[in-house]
Image 1 (cartoon, rainbow, N blue to C red):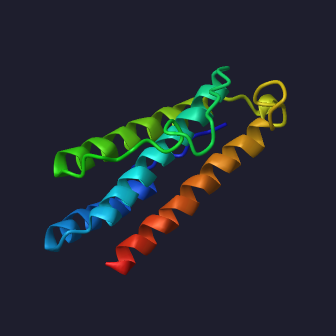
Image 2 (image 1 turned 120 degrees about the vertical axis):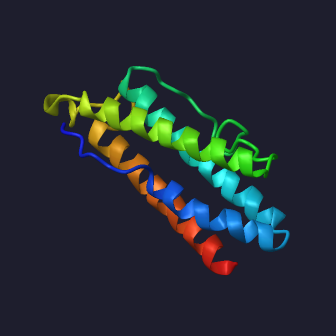
Length: 140
């Protein structure tokens, strides 16, 4: 598969707007929700990449591994979370670029969905949560 050059994760592009808003008044629940969303997106991009590389990457749904807590709401934590998401996104893109076309319709791992379905699931998951981030931004 060919990878198309990009300019970073779309979710990260929405986040800089949230940081200045947090300074205007205390939006601790919004900050925590946004931080959790960023980390959750990163978890599932990592799962997709790891599965492409042969690791089952079993994650219990709704566990702390699935939804890491976003306890630190400082600007430094925001920057670290965004950078981690971008790094993970780039690693996933690179893993996708190494997938041969012959493998697309094969199970990503025995007993799991195909590579095609798995990767589309990761992309749809990202977009779903990007929409949530956009709604949080709008609500402020």
